[in-house]
Length: 536
Image 1 (tube, rainbow, N blue to C red):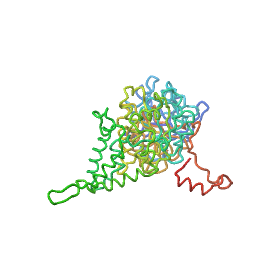
Image 2: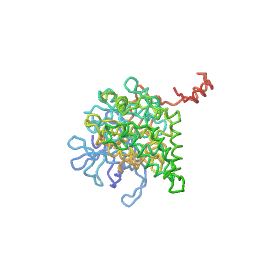
Image 3: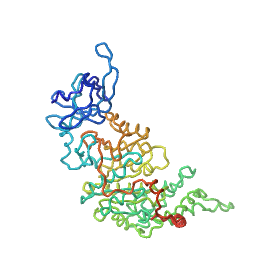
Image 4: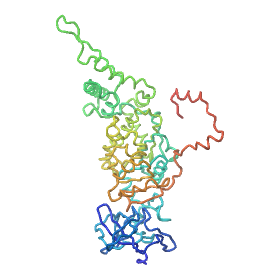
């Protein structure tokens, strides 16, 4: 049977993969084994290369017909490129390859039965995300500890099934008693997917008080770095904020820092800044009065601050009614994590948050989650997964002026796992997401990507030996993904399970709506809601 599966020999070995020369007598690329049809050279299929008491498993990344020179004459032959993914030794599969098969080693087609040991290596965990695309009735099993414990990137073009994939992956762990997941939901898509098992919080209604910001976030919100007086504004603001924090929290005065999340009076800080901006001091002798050292240096700062304080869209942040003492922070943390950390899935609905401060809100939420576990003595018993939906909007690549969220999440990407905080980065434009963050991801769920720039970017992110597999991305079906990373035995092409229930992310059926009468739209009502900023 093994000879019947022979398809060729290794003709070239490089660091990027192995080239296989298909046997000359093979003119039919179809094979039948045990009632199933297999196709030689099918992209993402597998081959076996026995060598030195081992069986090397490889994945097909390229198949072509080309002119080759053999025995001094040229002829056309089938040639394919394969990437080495693992080794079977003594019936046990191991990731990676310690010995590379040399030239002239025989290569065999792999059927389902041959790969049972490979695909079942993580079956013991009982965590499957879908069916293997190339093998009927074979499930794709992952190591869930490595999957959720090491950062994840879910990437795919609009309409490729990202929201459904994220919902499906997370629904598989929502039944567990101590699950801790926080979804930063930009478009309010996920509430429907986790009905009955989630802690839904509308940030615009929740209140997220200003005093939870650290000083870096305050700087980004209130100070224009291009202002020639920015350095003076930063110094004075820092002194006034910490003075107010100490005054409002005398029992903590000896241990407070500028970043300690305790209440301070922003109106008091503003009044003192106003005084410094207009201060005049007595001159010497007959000089009369003269301008103070900060006279006129805070004019732009005050305009920027007042615009936030008076804007009704920012009321949830600058006009809190519930969280007016430092002690109230404990209540807010219980809302986010649930009492005793029993929230399971917390959906932070950010659809009502003004777009221009989404970056600051994301920074605060991410940093507070990280800081919570940083100070949590039982962090190993309270791991947290942060899901950043539409990450390209607030975790941009270098050169952007929006910095706070990117800096915080970059820190979590580099240090979070030590403190039990992991990230899931979800984006349709990976080229626009911080490369520092994506480079720290150990698991990639890559759905259909049609943009050549995004494809090339992903090719740089995945290990070099699998970069050729990126070529299959434009042809993936909806909900089908190339899954690469530490949590699986080899790169897998998987049809991810459909979520139940599904998120509210499906496309509007334009044609069907246009050709039939439906709900009447009242222009006046829409304008009224627009004026009042009412979305629900």
